[in-house]
Image (cartoon, rainbow, N blue to C red; front, side):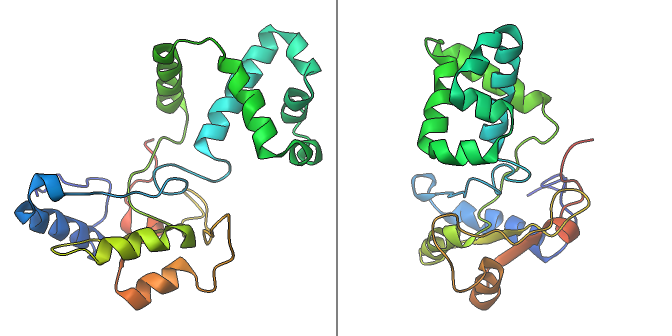
Length: 203
């Protein structure tokens, strides 16, 4: 690892654990090297809303400005009006299918380009690390059970000034132990956004 590795991280135990792991992993044959990442809150933001949700909502707002008739579709009206009760009544499948219809007939390459432009131009680009909630626990435990050098990294969202300060929880079940507590007990690396990251989002 060079001195330029992880330039947005401050020096400390979390950064050192990552660079030490990457150096040690050189002994592992490339075919056996596996990196497993959580998604929401880890690879990208989940507060104040999911990145993919922001992409679809922005697309809907832009289309509705050009095609006012879209307001007549109940799902779109609920989203455009920020009507939480109506959105809940439709449920995630109904909302997701309606939003997917916005791209009906679009060439996959054009869809990819639109998504790329969204990620480049939005204020909160993606973040890359490992896991941040109880929903990632089994993935992290599986990682540390493998032979050879391993790294289980948990992101602690503790920076209210530059991002959001919150304890991330699993969306599909109620955990009996917070992921940060599991990480401490298990000897995993905890990356504090407040202490370890010199930069969260580019200026």
